Length: 85
Image 1 (cartoon, rainbow, N blue to C red):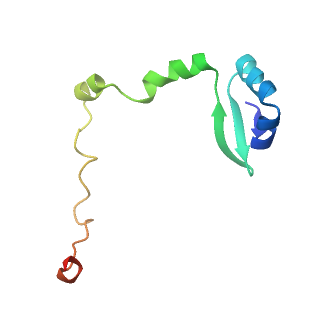
Image 2 (cartoon, one colour):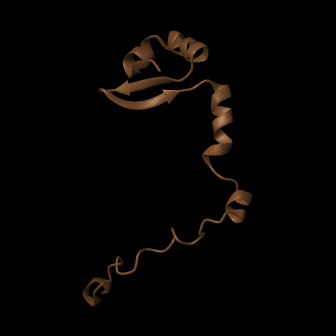
């Protein structure tokens, strides 16, 4: 995967886009940190359904449905009476 600085991607956008279509995903960096990836639309369409499970998949899964909704015991901080007034 080729890396482009944000400035180079902006200045050479047509080349950036053509390279993405011809070679696949292209990484964009900003101040040396990986920031974004440009992917061809066909790859993006293939990745979309797998990025989030459907409601049907969630309801039929073996994964606990409320485990992530409840905080760990003893982790909640109680407010004092002075804070409530």
